[in-house]
Length: 274
Image (tube, rainbow, N blue to C red; front, side, top):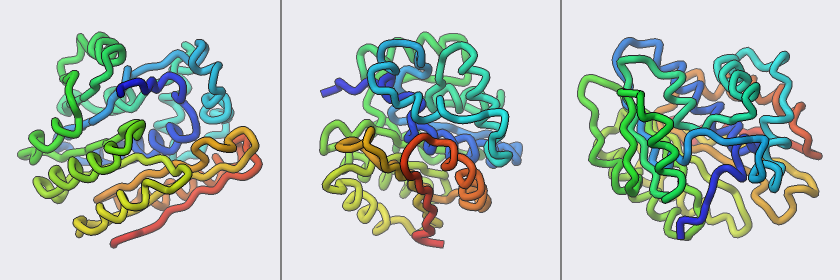
């Protein structure tokens, strides 16, 4: 079942939203000295070749991050823009664990999960010399709850499954609920695709049923012949987001949506529970 390889999609418009959200949350959490535990349930390989066959086959990078003008990048996302631009000079795009590792501090720690037999060894090699990082080639849905709560620290959790099987939707709810009930004040970010049949909606409704904290949805929708029959919208659900997150994303994506090469692009931010 583990056929998904993120190299085909690295730096696409879905990564743009996901990593913009992630970088803003980390930047905000670093305003306080208390350490952060970052947990990534589906970390992938960590870094991807945007000049290789995978990126060329889908063209998603070229239509996503590859179409952006970093000389005129929104100030709200300067941290993300500067980081990404430094990797693009090497024809590489960093995945969520590498973005987190680069932005986090010496006192912070990263717990990364990846099951894929090809991606997990690459992830382990990438972070072999970083003492803050522990890579587990195991099921991140199961590995997440025991890592919480965190004593005398904050927690930031990214749940980012490929949704290549239907169980990913229900497993995401089960894992998130178990983790949230163990640490209500953690920051939880769940990525999801919007595809035909809207299988994400029952998942989001299930999460709303047990979350009593501040809850936001952020979505980026594109419309173009090139995405017909493919994922045309991507979303992030964030529990306990920084209070500036919605405003910063809304302002930043006013500019970004003008740069993406689709017939139409729409960013939306919705407060589900305040």
